[in-house]
Length: 526
Image (cartoon, rainbow, N blue to C red; front, side, top):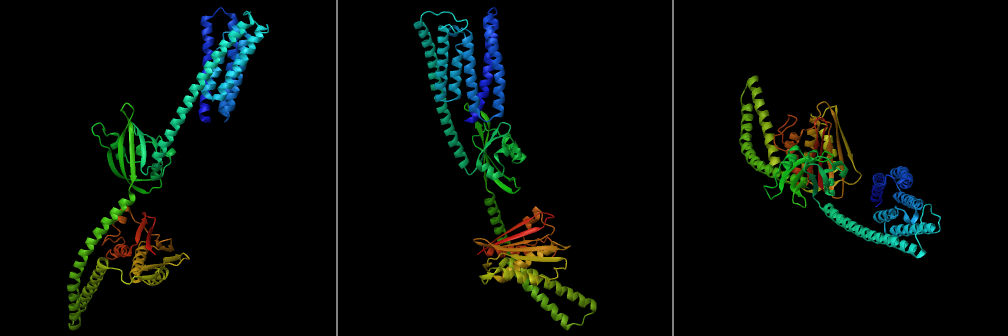
């Protein structure tokens, strides 16, 4: 309300200046010989100009618009009364100026202000006319008997009251319309903000003109950040071009799109967008309405399900293939060992036999890993102390060839008991494989940190190394068989980790960027 009153007061200041200037100009053209007219109107105009400067300063530097209104009202009443007094009282040309005070009181304030304005105007006018009747008004001429004076006062009073009643009626109608419009706007805003989908309106150039609360929540940007910015600043250029180049007159359907984008924090979002034309009352397109849903979690679940199905198919094929390879491989290795023990071979041939046996052992290990990946199922599920399991595995791993003097492993745990339902042997393999990957990613040394903690429903393990990190493409392939980032081993380690975690109804997440190390987070149900 104060902001509206402040805007109206500025309009009143400007209107008063224009009106006084217009009266002065018309007087110059219509009454060039009436020196008495200019004798009164010139000082009045000068006073209005000077006071207008004061009003503007008060309007600009004070936050009390009601005070500014009352000051203007008081000075207008004094100036108009003085002008009428000096210009002949009841015969003055400027009596209608009282009407202006009543009009702007009805437009700017409430019924009480109108009553005060009309009461003071009638009182001031009646007082000046009576002073003129007593001969105390300079330049006032006799108007006849006292009943005639009362009659003329009554006519002007009726005019003032009529304007006041009309002003009160119109101001009440305007105030009621504003309240209804405000209530409708609040309801509309509540409906829009209650939507769980993001909603944007754009003008014809693709500039954002409004948005709802869900759009702020999904994008991470505030209303101040997005208003008056182009849609291409929020979504990709291709999405913006498709919206702005779509001809909705040729199709009655909305434009549907899917895209990956980033929110304010840089997190990836998968959004489904629907764009429709924004129409005016004349059914002319004035912009666009863009609705969008955040389906990132659903998309991730779909991708994860597809990955599981793919891994299951690979696992089934791998199991059959591994069994077919293992049988002849065992026969081959055994036969060569028999030949080695029975034949007398030269050093060169004995060396070749050792190479063949070593490679047979390596192939047998790969086949064993394959079978573990393809067919591993939780064996003895029992309450497992995760801290003891991880601690023992770390101590054993420090004796492995991969662990060097330049490496360090730091284990920390919350004070809460860290007990989950798991196969301890399989989870030792999970920890070992993650340690092996983390240490191999730090060929020049570094620290690998392990954090263990719990929440209401899960036990969590977090492994953080200071290694070379992973690109987006490497993260996508990390759990696929035969993908070895270090160039060592068969590339089944993280695939086995993934399988074991999934079979224990847990989840695993990789957070890594090139040159910034890698964090592997595993969550297991309590």
